[in-house]
Length: 192
Image 1 (spheres, one colour):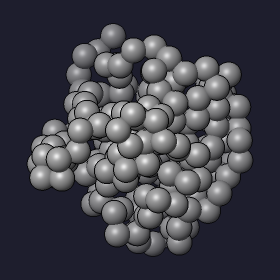
Image 2 (tube, helix red, strand yellow):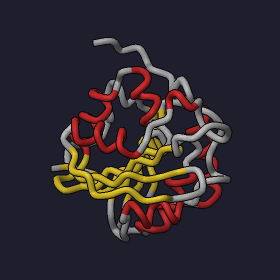
Image 3 (tube, one colour):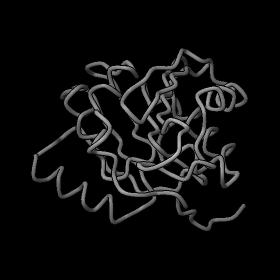
């Protein structure tokens, strides 16, 4: 197995301005006192909102392979004096350095299409499944498959049906699809 880090080939600027984290976390079903994983957190805007939702008895793990984004997030965590968030630098194609059956809700926003393009879905989704509690929620947010900015090139975008198929193929149970913004949809699934 290679230990070479994979860069997300289609990662672009933050979607902080076009994706409402409250709407995302509401659709994902995140509640107070839960343990949350933001898989591919980027600048962490969803993680920051999740820390408010789970409150002091909950925990947020903001995970990304891109250290500069995590450094920016760490500064923001320190400035806001957030005590329930941990920043994790890791390549999900190799390992998520968290315990088995730890996470109640995992969100992956604007990242799955990259793993699909790179052919690294299996190791990533195996790791997500491993860290999720039985019955835990895995919510995938992707850009609607349409031409034009914002978002990645049309040919790498996924339809909700494609995301559902990918998740089912990797052992997740589909819980429905919701629109979570002008440019995004969310597919909710559960670990069996």
